[in-house]
Length: 156
Image (cartoon, rainbow, N blue to C red; front, side):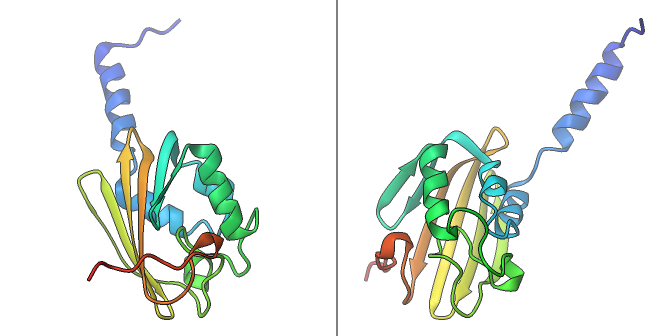
């Protein structure tokens, strides 16, 4: 039986830590999922929270229901952000397609902005322990949010 030295063990641990995803990696994976709910949910912590339009959706089971409502239980038609598919925070596939305008990160928070027609959206993803802990969705413009509620309007 081969024994591992301390240096070898430390090198393996360092390599594993170096492969942790960045917040931008989470955002990009989220938008490229094409509405695949299993792929989306793989990145959430069990106790994650999604904040949208004045409500908090808590826990993976409830977040899964939110996405099932958006994507019809599986995959959005014409899936993929670059192909006009739906994105978290949208009510099904956006009309006229979804255009991601910017993805960036600061510390453990990933951000993205996107638009679909007159709707403009900013999403924030707080990453803890290599999982999405909190996702906040801010919508402006015309359109509707999941459940038919109008999107939140910025305070004036």
